[in-house]
Amino acid sequence: MFTQQFFVEGLGCASYLIGCEAKGVAAVIDPDRHVQKYLDTARSRGLKITHIIETHLHADHVSGNTDLAARTGAEIYLHEASNAEFPHRSLHHEDVIELGNIRLKAIHTPGHTPESITLLVSDTTRAEEPWLALTGDTLFVGDIGRPDLVGVEAARGLASSMYDSLFTKILPLNDSLLIYPGHGAGSLCGKSIGAMRATTLGFERRYNPALSPRERGEFIDFAVSGLPEQPGNHKRIKAMNRKGPKPLGNVTEKPLSIQDAIPYFQRGAGLLDTRSKDAYIRAHIPGSVHLEADEQLSNRIGFVFPPDVPVVLLLEHPADYERVVYSLARVGYDNVVGYLAEGLDVWERMGLPLTAGDIKDVEPVELYQIMQNCAGNDCPVIVDVREPWEYRQGHVPGAMLIPLGELSLRWNELNPERPVAVICASGNRSQSAAALLGQKGFKTVYNISGGVGAWMYSGLALER
Image (cartoon, rainbow, N blue to C red):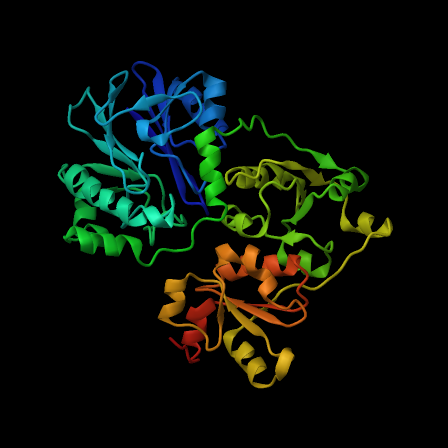
């Protein structure tokens, strides 16, 4: 049996290729949109991809299932409760897929979503007993799947289903069972997923706080409390996955001259500037959105950029194009029309406007001193972009709560002429919030470095 995990940093997504080398067949589980890596790996091992299996319909990233199916002819499998609208085969509880000498048994484990499954994988040349489990978003390293992405109103019911899935279907299995989850650290599909990318059932039984013995009601309360912000654009992503994503095809560079790009801007296209922060501060195009082309781009774009708007990229290097396009496509931003092939020096020579400056990173003590020495509308409004449960645990005195996921709809509650300071737990979410406010024309935006943690460690007071 050949097994390989593929991991997307930032999003924390894990997908898998499972193959029987004796028979030359393979399955891909939970593929992301960069499908060429599965094709290359299968080819290198002499395998033909014949099955594509989804553990559930994802809310944090768009699947590559239809693209991979178009390229290989493989069939897509989902649980019958998925209500998927594209061609697929339905799986039922305890259905078995024979993959040469490998057996994959689908166990219905609802909780994260109604259709979630766990795949028990056996290498029948060695034993009938399952060797590993592909748990999707049911069981993670040190965590379990959150139950609220289908809808907050359904969270408690799904948490009750998760209780049954874990305690009656998964935990009775052997401690030696290898656990390969659908997500690792960085994902928003759990509360605090561990950094290790695989584990054993025995280790999780002993050390995973979600698996501590609890009555059903206590477990439900645990599962629905303390959840992080929902992934940006998650409802649209879920809808795309249910309908069937349009195959992305091969990504090829699309350089645009400034003359070619201007008509796109005139028709409403947005400019996403992915250069370094230093480069952006020196000069940038007014109205552009700045998000660096780092591992967090996929997580941040959904909070600050409309998903249906055509996108023109401004890159640090043209070689970044493919990586950035996949980062956007993984979260449903498919309409990248190209990248500016000419620099800002050409833009300026054409008489087009440039501006400088940026969101100002500010240390907590520095902002505190600003607050002590300002008056009236010169004082920054502090906006806390964490979730309500985080806010209740302690926040900067007088801070206004606008969770990051709501900021794109509520930014007009703020005065663009007045300084705004944004804060989150550590500085990541506030950077996305600051980018959105900068794009909306706010004159002075502070990003509080290190977030509430740094504020507290600086000896500054919090209120509850």
